[in-house]
Length: 419
Image 1: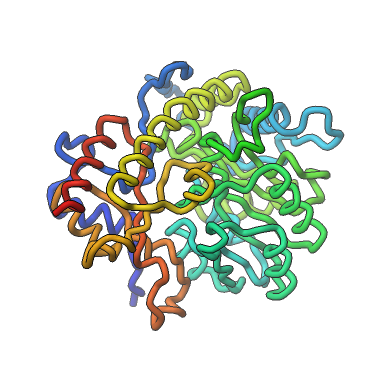
Image 2: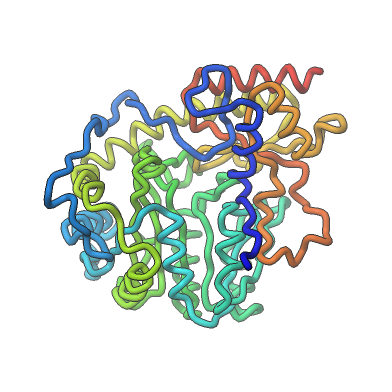
């Protein structure tokens, strides 16, 4: 009567950890698996939300597309960050609010027509079921090669669109799990290529505050506070560029589950219509609470604090893995340029630790959580399950938690590797 619904990779990992005694806040566990940033105050960060007001008005339904004031605030932030001096500006009608990134992406998937939808490998585990359950579009994988540093060049993007007849492309940027970042001239060419070839570019930009490089992005000795494809759009209502972001990662409020979609008005109208039957809209009180967080000065302050604190944790993890003889994706460029993950290459370790699934289970015995690389080799409909995954020798490790937890986790993994 009901079909089996698989657990996404991270949910599988957390379930396995739970069966071994893990729970959130457990002092003995090191959760380097789940994609969540530390949520407390960081040096230089804006004051954290401590209360959320609920009154009679905030207890009412909010409009499905989102509160008008919040939609205006998102548009104003994007214009301030990415559209200064440009004639085409975002408005509230270019924004839809939803209850988290998965809901926003599900709305977009519902609104897609009968197109070939390109998606890159590796990428975010939850895309697998998302790309399977909706049958209007056909998911077309684009393999990112290790020899290219798991990076999709503008040239290969054009080849994929033309060769596979893509009508849309979905990707995370920065990439989860590799931390590779498309920015600057490459991102401009991505946007330009998709616009010229009438291919909708759908970018999951949930990690766009977590920017550590490349050096070519430096201006006056500093990196940009954030990166978005919206900076390279010519006409906000004509170019088929859609981005999804939210409070989960970039503002470090994963429990609030509040996101936004930014794109042409015609697409926003369609995803809002999808929301009317899929989810009914985001909670009113949370949308009100989010308003001050979207002020450009507050958002830039949070981004600066994130980059300062997380760059230290990033280097801590890179050094710890190097000491174990474990490389990471993007090592040729100094490590991940964005997000808060190291996609760790285990293949130089002795058997059986050179297998990601075995490494994951062995790490659980030491109360350390990681995510096997095979889960990022997303395979809608299991059409490739007869072929061994090329990512079997990788795991994803997060430097999202507080520093002390990362240090303990690395110490335990070093003990595991040393035997």
